[in-house]
Image (cartoon, rainbow, N blue to C red):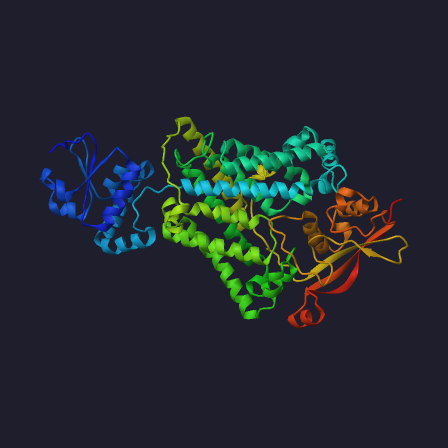
Length: 603
């Protein structure tokens, strides 16, 4: 019998909850290409098909009357080209897929319950319009934090009167490697590296961040933000060499293709984001979290024997006062915390690729870990950026269930099919980025295997590897910088955020990052100024009384004239306990170790 429809007709069992749910999902995929009808209503129109066939599997009736059933009917209806090719050409694929289909159909009551548990009962089309809106606003806020935080210290770090002047750095690159430097050191400051241009890029980054938050031309705004921040990171040298700086660049680069091509992003004409770049952002989140857990297990015994948190809170770069209290908790709690952390970093990331409800659970677990890290440590905007990535794990249906109705906007989807060449471009770009990131990720996990060299992408810092605290620091050396006019009486330079005075509580400073204070932590671990290339520049700036550098400190003990001599001594710091804090009012205990940098003066 010929089908009377001008389109294929998929006939299903309307009495089956499992069938009803997945038919609703397939209707979103096929749109107007396929008609659907329950066999309870149309079986009489097809007497050549036994009733038992309708009861056991879906039937796809083509325009020419050909009847397909089971897995073949599903693949043809969905027009799934890769799987269709495998079905018709790959030996064993057809029989295997039909066996799986029959197994699911036989136990459909179980799989119906599993579907409700994993995906829920909502049959609306899965969209990520609100998720993208939240993600882009979050990313705009993080860019704003990054540019503002850098702007207030940029001149002391890399300004013309700073510790590592950008102009001198670029001139050295030009002299040593010539024209190749424009590629290896990509930055807009090749045009002009003056202090005015430092101000211009920081101010421009702030304005572009506000534009992204407001939703104005998001794709082009993100291009500008990525270029500006890459330019600053490149000339920032050691002061902008942190994992969150390159993470922001990688997230920002992927967001360029994830954002809508609209003059103003609105919910009245919301387009579905690129599926390819949605998954690339999720893949980035997976790499970030899984690698963070993997490197701890692979690199340091104290993580494997669950003792790392016995000293982590006091040895991290900039502790918080809450971290002091957590440090006092018993060892069983610290070990349980490490087990929980490994569960979140090594197991939960796989839920990123799971169905809706498990993915939502995974999102909550990842966000919960980031909140705990925010409370016990100062890691600038890193944790906020990770939380922003987690937002795209939740689709719009899940947001409706999680948020009160007054916070959930009405979204009017406006499907805008991509031009063929744009689809090809997105596919090629996404495939290349996935391949490159996979190579770098594989090289990080399997170091004994020689992966192809992809160093040519390194200058752009947009395909990276991650993993914090691979080597745990078990003690806390701290540099104390002092100045003197007679080499007898020494006055201490106090920093704004890093530990110094013993009775000053550890402070919260995140999401701002005081980059000099952070680098002082790394410098102390080096053990000597000879191993820290920028340290003598910093000491020289104190002797020259450079105001841009002095503004990075909490106070200047020589307000009238610079000291004749400066030196740096190394102390071993550790947290006090409750008894000492109550009796002496001190948060820290310290012991003198040795001279870090001997007394120096200007010639």
